[in-house]
Amino acid sequence: MVPFGDFEYFGLLLYILLPLIVLGFFGISNRIWTLAVMAVLLVLQATGAVPVRPEFHVREIYIILGYTVFQALVAWGLLKFRSRVVFYSAIALCVMPLVASKVLPSLVPHTAFGFLGISYITFRSLDVLFSIQDGLIKTISPAPYTAFLLFVPALSSGPIDRYRRFLKDWEKARDRKEFLEDFDIALHRLARGFLYKFIIAALIKTYWLDPWSTGRGIGSLWMYMYAYTFYLFFDFAGYSAFAIAVGRLMGVRLPENFDRPFLSKNIRDFWNRWHISLSFWFRDHVYMRFLLAASKGKWFTGKHTSSYCGLFLTFGIMGVWHGLSLHYILYGIYHAALLSFYDWFARWNKTTKRFGDSALQILFNRLATFHAIAFGLLLFSGRLTPPPPPALEKILEKADTNEVVGLMWDRVAAKKEVKVDLYVDDAFIERRSADVYREDLRDRGFGDGRHGFRFVLPWWVRDGRPHIVEVREATTLEPIKGSPQTVEGERNEEEIRRGEEEIRKARDAAEGAVQTPATPAPTSPERAPAPSGAK
Image (cartoon, rainbow, N blue to C red; front, side, top):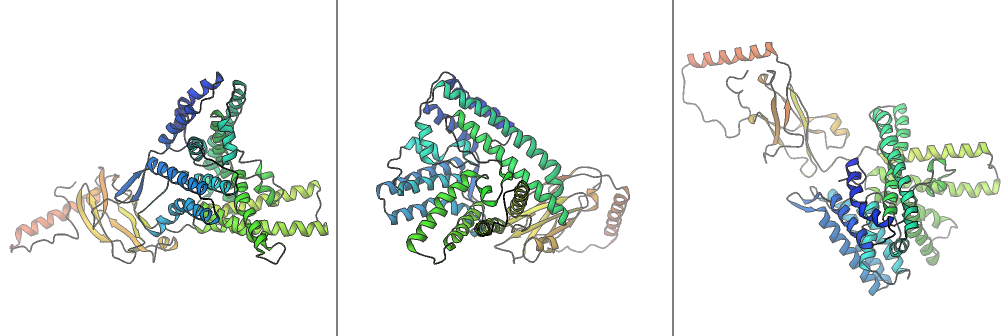
């Protein structure tokens, strides 16, 4: 079940949160109930199975629990044996599951690892390790630490909280007055979330984003850029509003994530307003630490070189955190370049005073910043850099009463001949090689493009009746994705008449001919005859 993804989730959420709400109205603060509510929500959200190997699936909830125990042991080890070597080892161990979840499927096809929210939980785990190393955390209690890592409202999309701030809310006994304040804020945030996600974002997607998502040309790309920018904001801000609302009902005041980002006067101002919890996390734990290390080690001679290198390091990591695809990496580099340029420009303008703070200048700055942001989100969308093909793609793309079309792609065995079998109504019809050249496959990165297949269906399928069409991989006899399908079309009387006439002629010729002993048929016929009596 996707958190905050549909109205069914909110219906269940209301019943699950009801005990906490009732206790709050009576001024009772009970963290045992909060943990119980979180456990129920976590089980509902982590119901799927992760294919660690094609033949080995693990329930997502078990991976989450194992991950939590692993991170707790890493944090406990750093607390007990705090040193620089142990600290770096702990950081490496902490990020290892996240790296595995992103890299493993690419390196080892047909494998997967991870769970929904592993990126955000990793950031929380790292925050604890940084705070331990800085001497800000002396002890860790199991219940608050587990609640912090697995705080369900912010599990899948943030905001990213800090352990010491979270601990103050968790340990505080909330009275009735404070609960009513939180309850009022929660209602407002829920209303904002529904407005943003289920009304504004949904309308943008239906009537603006989707219609321009397949068009070609500068005009279509331009309109898609605007649509994607506003859709991403309202959808993401809606999720954040829901998380903050539910967090308030649980007595945890999650940090804000957005503050009118499209009114930013420059790119630095934008990152103080957009995904605030993420940008501040990177600022504190990556950028500032890099500057401190560079200053102590005297790595650079230039006055501002360390700052620029720190920006590219910070936003490069941020890009890779979103994913290993090229468009995410370009997105990070793009924002690092924008921030570096703005830093240079701001210092130059401070000296020359070429640009002032008039109302017209501020309006121009906001428009220019917005378009720089929108272009960055266009990069982020992947529209400018088509994503690489998956490691494995075996799919029936089209099936009707005339033809069956699809593709068979396996990056590991891309140069091997792959055969597919066609079945109609569970009867074998034909076996062919999936070696049809398609330019669209080549353009999408599927090798040399010779990985398509096409079957022309026999005449008797066009009899006006429904038929089940199925494509199977010849070696395993397993149906491919999208198969089977039911096809049905208008009866083609002329084609049926010709087909039946050909059958009659063949039978007459066979009855009049002198028969000789037949050669045994091959075990894997290339084509099966039409069923006798097909209409």
